[in-house]
Each structure stands twice: as C-alpha cells, then as structure tokens.
Image 1 (cartoon, rainbow, N blue to C red):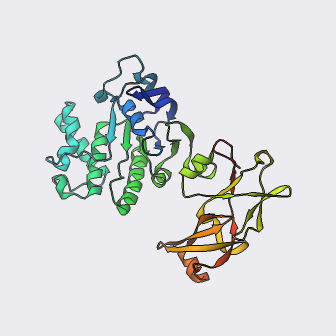
Image 2 (tube, rainbow, N blue to C red):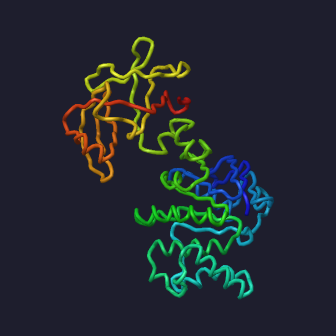
Image 3 (tube, helix red, strand yellow):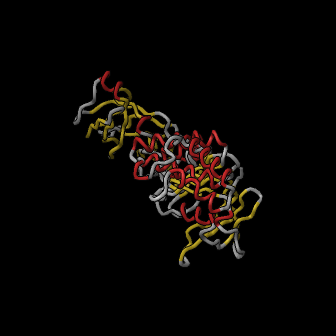
Length: 359
C-alpha cells in the first residue's frame, strides 16, 4: 500500500496555470475524495500524479518514492504502479471480461499462471465471477465499470485512482456503485483517490476529502462529517449541498430574520466577532420546520419528490427552499400554495461575505 504526497505542485497548460502551489497528503490505505466543480483542475492534478503531465513546480511522492518533480524526468506512467479508472470505463469491446482484466498483467510479462490467478481474484473481488467469458456488449454499464475496477486492481497493489467513474451511470446504478466501491476499498485496504464533482458521492465514499474551488485552490480538507457540519467558509457550505442564505436585519443590539410581511420575528444569536452589516443566516432546507415557529413564510410552490416535499417559500424578501419528510407532511397536512405558514430554524450559520469565517 502507499500514501500520496503532493508538495507545492503547479501545473499549467499553454502558460495558463491550472493548479497553483497545491500541497496535499493522502494517507496510506484511505479512500480520499478530491471534490470540486467542473474545470477546477481535478483531472489535471490526477494527470500529474499518473505521469501524463509534467509539473511546473513541486513534486509528487507515492509512498517513499519520488515519481514526479519539476525540472526532472519523472517515473514513466507504466512504472508508477497506479490503477486508473476514467469516466468512460475504457473497456476494450473486442476482449472478454477475463481478457480485459488480464491484459495489463500480460503487458508486464507476469508469468501466465500468476497472471491468471490474479485476474480471477480481481474479477471475484468486484463480484463478476461467472462473467469471465462475456463480452462488454453483453454487460450493463455498472458491470462494465466493475470490469474497469478489476483491471485497475490487477494493475496496482498500491494505489487506485478513480476519475468520475460512475457519472455516466443512471441514478440507481450510481448509488449502487458508490457503496460497492467503498466496500471494495475497505475489503482490500488499497489506497483510493476518488475524483468527483458530485458532493453526495464524495460524502458517502470518502474517509477524508479535499474541497477545491473553481480556481483549483484547496478550501478545506477533513473527514466528510466534519467538513459538512463545520465548513471553513461560505464557499464550502454552499458547495456541499442545497443552501439558503437569508438576509439578517439589526434589531436593537442583535439580529433578526424578518417574515414575509417584513416583521422582525426570529432573533439570531450572532457571535460578536461577526457583527456587521450585510450579514446572512445560512441553513439547509431540511433545517427549516414548516407549520410551527415565530416566522411566517408564504408558500409559492409545492413539489412532491417521493420521499420528501420541497417548498419554495417567500421570506425576508427572497425565495428560500424548505424540505419536509413526506410522511410527516401527509400526517400534518401538506402546505398549500399561496398560503402563509409559521416556520422555525435550526443549525444556522452566519456569513458576512465570501472571505469571513462562520459560526
């Protein structure tokens, strides 16, 4: 197994800097998610790790081995002992399942008996035993992805990199595969770097995660639960899930949320070091209770989503989103569009602007 260390890594394309001075540590044996919006440099960083892109500054180590460094010839990609799965699977259509997984071992000259056994073991690990002679055209998207995972496993006993591996699957398969990948990682103990723009996948699969912004800078690193509950800033809070930002007004020495009629109804306990004009209360849709509380909001739209209802509510001069469990909504009575309902808030955080800390 092997951890990965990025030290002051800068990578550019056509003189345009994509990754600028990034440093990051991935611990041996963990599943580490690199999460960020499209075009933020996630795949560029992985190309640098795999040896497909030269570094402008800094260096990358896999375990104790320096595999890439600025101004030096790095270890060739095929000798870095990295298994890689990309978004499009790259399963060869003219090879059977067995042949697809066996191929990297054949290219490396692994003895036939050993290569065959390692191939069969990897196929079994991804729950594709019995499909060895099937062709890719006979497989579902999820099964093809398992084949790609098996090939990555035989390619490396140290490190597997997954770059948006399930984004092309339908919703049900995505959910199934993210749990299978996590179970596989735990069972094998291999180090996994999982690259994605999907917050739900990153939260579900990672032991730790790094949040990148649109310019490729790391905004926070940590355990998913801690990052979600204690975001460093407004960017991280907003990126990790559906968010409401409700403007606060001063009322005496404190702050309040105003209702649909503009009346100050909900006092907020804002830390003294955040006191400023232009302050916002941030909350998730699930942290707003409708049907009880001191603040009246006007329900503009009601949308049924199966396991929950989502309401668009006018409050404090803007539209916010409120989510309610469907069973609870049916038991209490589903709110009607065009009517005002009392509401209350929990788990509020406070932001003045992008650069200010939150509480």
